[in-house]
Structures are given as structure tokens and as C-alpha cells.
Image 1: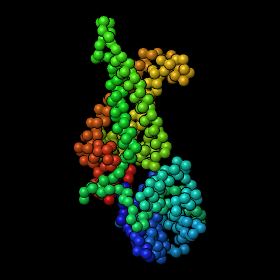
Image 2: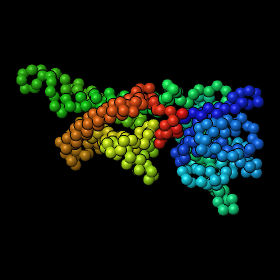
Image 3: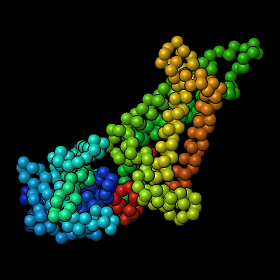
Image 4: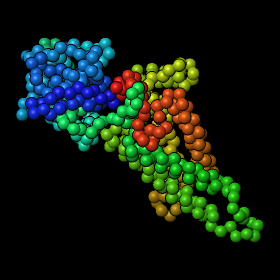
Length: 406
């Protein structure tokens, strides 16, 4: 996240700082900062001055003259948000609109404007995370202005991080030409490495169950012991652990404050522009195009691949439960899971379960190769990001899914 350094002093000498913006995805973060920065020309409020300074530094292309006094309705103790008429504002590329900007405390703006339950939960979690670091959320919503200056329905776009006094940084910086950007949460990194360990154990024990290639052989007068029993016990126990990990990932998709981890990110093709960017990424992977769009998190091809991986792992869990249910046919619950074996046959389910395992091995092989290749060519620390949670990006670069790296 880019971190503008715009600041201003209050009457008591306390510094007001702007740390950046959070967007729900309908407009860029710089646009939200630009909307929050519009104010009356006579305004001497430290927050207004800090926002204008941050805008001038971070998005000089959005710098606009302060609005007229009659177009500005300031916040009051009873109504904790301001209303500002903004003429000819570039909400999107080459799309200039007349809008009314609602800017103020988070909850009053959420109560007044239109926002889905999913986005409301997401914006509240990010605001809580910012509050824990000493920042406050200055919510931003806009309404279109129609003929005869009729104001439409307000829609929440996001919020701006505003800090007073000493606050914790929202992102850490590296050497002078690079910036370190936080991407992956600690919970996701833990799930990633747990998945690595679990898939390795399941693959090894599953292969031994399929083709026991070591240990005493039966039928030669030797005591085979309980070796295969231990292998199966480990396979089943770790299999149930894998299901538990999968359920935590599903829960995170609906509760996480990180928009990169939300369920909506599982399908990245939401607009024609997204499809075009996917084509550019495919051309780059096919060595047709020298460059691809820059993403802080996963590009569309990677995200679609991981979505397919989630589905494949879900199918593997279900087929594993189907085979496990064969040994508990007196229980209606496991009898229900074992039902596909009666339709398709036990050999087919076992073969399918094995083939999915081989597909997972193929994915891991390609995944490791592409991760090492990308790190070697782009030098952004993508591999280490699954340990420390962040990547290195060149200052001044403009990712598709994040603001310009400052």
C-alpha cells in the first residue's frame, strides 16, 4: 500500500497524518484519497490540510481547486459527516462525473449509505485493524448528481487512514529503490505450510497403501506385523486434519478482512478489463509478450489455478471420506458418504483418488518451478513472502491490485 506522508498540525501542535486509503474495489485507492481531500477553500481543519497535502504528493493528477463554500456542508456534532458537491471529478479513467461526497466517521456513513453485508463486514474488519495501530477510518461515500442537481443514492467506496500523534506504520519499507509491501496474513501462511506437510504425508502414505514397496511380505512365513495398519492410521488421521484445515480456509473466505483472501477473489474475472489482463498474462507465460501486468497478490491466471486447486482438493477429501466410509457401513452417516462406491464401484473411486493425488504432485512440481523462476527474474521475494508475509516491489511501480508503490 502506498503511504502518503501528508500531514498538518492541530492547534495543540499534534500532527495529523494520512497513511493511505482502503478501497472496496470499485475505484482506485488514489481516487478515494482525492474524494476525501475535497473541501471548502476556507477550511483550516488539520484533517483537510493533511488530506490535501497527501493528495498533492500521492496523486497530483487528481489535484483539484477547493470547492465553493455553498457546495460544502460541514459535519456537525449530531451528523458526523460532511457533504460536498464536486463537479467534473474523474471517478474512473476518462469518466468525469458530478457527485456529492459524504466523508466522516465510519458507522454514521455506513448507516446512511448503501452497502452490501459482505462489504460492510470487510470494511469494518479493516477499520478495526487500522484502529489497533492507532489509525482512524475516515469513510468515503459518493452519490451521483442528476439533472437539476438531484442527488442519487450514496454508495460506500472505502476509507482513508488518518492518524493523530504517534501511530504504527501500515507498511514497512526496504532499501531506497524498493518498498516492502505486506501481502499475506499470518493465518494464510500457516495454512500454506500445514498444507505442504499434510499433502506430503498423505501422498507418501497413500502411495504405500496403493503399492506397499517395503516391509515384510505376506505369504512367506514371516510375521508382517501391523506395519500397514500404522500406515493407514497415519493416512486417515492426517486426512481428517487436512479437512479441518480446508474448513478454516472456507471460513476465512467469508470472515477475513483481507480482500485478497475473500471468496470474491476466487473468481478474478469480473470485468472485460480483467479478461484482457488475463490474456496479457497468458501471453507472457507463453513467451509471446515480454511483460505482464504487475500484481501484488495473485494475477488472474494464478488465482484461477488456485481456485481449481481448491476444488480439486475438495474432491480429493470427499473421495477419501467415501473410501473411509466403506469400513463403517453400519453407521448411516458413513453409509451416506460411501454411497458413490455403490454407483461407480470401489476400484473406480480408488483409481480416481489416486489420479487426483498424481495431479497434486504435478501441480506442486510446476508451482515450485514457476515460483523459483518468477523470483529469479522479478527479484521480488515471492517465495519468502510465504514466510514473512510481504514482497519487495520497485518504488514507483503501479500494481493492478494495489496503489502505486511509494
